[in-house]
Length: 127
Image (cartoon, rainbow, N blue to C red; front, side, top):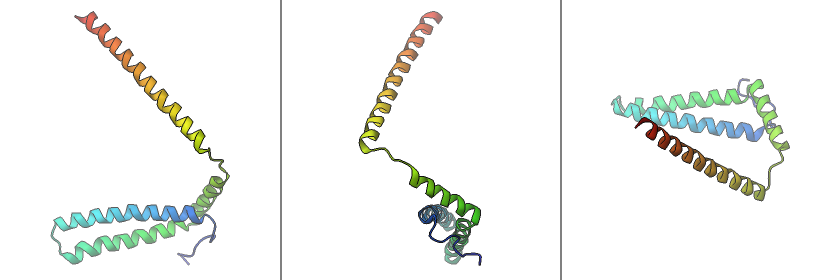
């Protein structure tokens, strides 16, 4: 059948999160369409049923795509790889973040001083 779950139980969280993400995007798009249709004064039936019908069609499309064998196999493999990742400790992340922020500030200051130096140099050269 078209909407059977391919390899049930494998890649569950990846597929679930992808489906929810796509549903949120489709829902926001349908909400925007609803607001656009309200401005055209087409009647309550058209204003509500067109976005609702579009959302149902998009939901069925996402459900079909998430269970399509090639896409589902990719998501299953991605979830398997994410389980193999060794995540850094909180302390390592804090130290790395501090180093990155300090270097960005240092480079911003150096570039600002260099820019100011060039500006002064060319102002004196041209005037």
